Length: 159
Image (cartoon, rainbow, N blue to C red; front, side):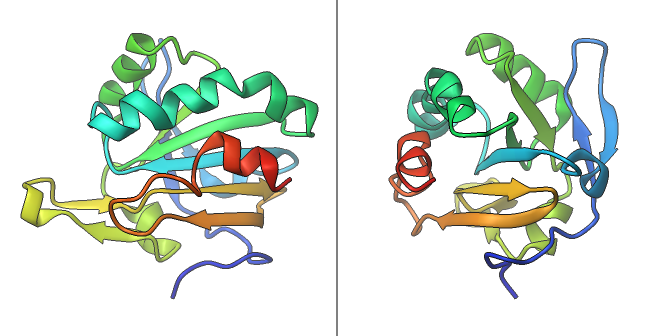
């Protein structure tokens, strides 16, 4: 079942990528008490994710903050080391990178995707959401192969 606006996020372990190394976090703890713009990409270093999705959130950080967003986070079915390198390569140090290496979070919210046909295994669908104190306030799920409703610009226009 896919998560919906008004639903509380499930409590799942994620791994935050930091310069000091991977840091395990529970989603319930991470999202508690703040308003977070969360976006998910199928994979770090993939074309749309690197050329459009991540750069849009880096560019729109101050605009999102002016609309009451406390933090911006990205999740992907990659390990924390890959996400940390991707963040550095894209000057995205202001974006929290939340590794979902086993797709546990993606599965728990019903937004996992089978990319075996591309040799990428189980991944996350592309989406964006606003999470307010652990509750989904806005949810924008992309159709397969598309990039429009999960962009930073779309999220901003709908706050």
